[in-house]
Length: 395
Ligand code: PLP
Image (cartoon, rainbow, N blue to C red; front, side):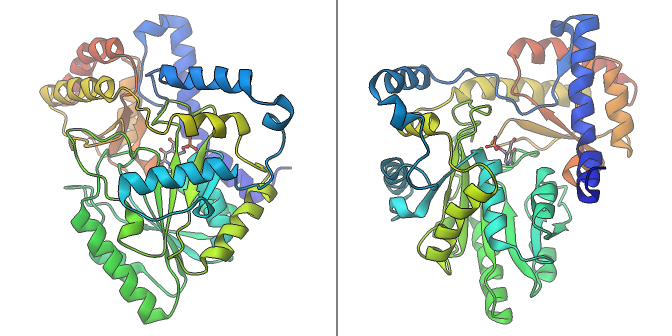
């Protein structure tokens, strides 16, 4: 029999998995072009040409034995880490060295490493609802306790009063995700400053270290020139988890990195622990070919105008139908208010029109649904008459 803890995790992950299977089933019956699958955050924009060029160049020019071998340090190639650090320094006026960078297996790998090195059983991890549902499992992996701050459904910015109340002596980490999955909201500099001040005060009050984990796979996906503050500049005990999954459309390649700044308490210990964690969690080191590729593509950008057009079209189309939704400033999700309290029933109703969307309860925020608009523009345009029919059931 599978482990008890795993049984819970399997049960909790069944909603999105069921949706995925349902999409495949409907596509077989109606044809893929007649199914409007907004369930997955899988980028629809191809990776930049530079990615392919870099991979070919690396394969042609590098010694294959070294290229496909284990890396000397599990934290990644030294030159890759150094180049990542310098690139961050020039973008964000930080002062990292390669030592502060640990290459990881995507953001998911990075978050698991971060929580592995921080959590003792029973330690609390604070998240702001709505939040990426996997945080529940990542925290449970290391016997941490997830503490969710209730959502501010007006702005979807963090509720800071409740945050201050819920920090305890057991709080070891706070995860923020901006631009946010599932709302698309970007936390303003003012919000970040207030959040940092609360955390600093609480560290002093309790005499503990409380780490801020910035989960930022959507950093490069911000619209209309909105600024996404770089959090190490506001709070010393910050660990950044970055990923190339969305910024270069490479989610299947599993590549990202952690930044552990010198300013963080016990920084040197955290960095060496992270190298051990990558190994003992079983990833060992981030994929070598991908490490060498991304470092050649640090200045490459995905075609954000593609997502922006989808964002405008779906957002305006849904509003015309009578739905309400906060306009996303980043990422590629819309978080739409369910016209009925039971958003799972609403998702079921949408399925009648071959529209697949995810209930907000998967993100700790019932009463809302998430739509991932990283799909083709045709899917968006063709879905709108279906949304209109769906809306007629409610408005
Ligand atoms: N964090 C958030 C908020 C995400 O939305 C995702 C993926 O969708 C991840 C982490 C995991 O990303 P990666 O593919 O880099 O592991």
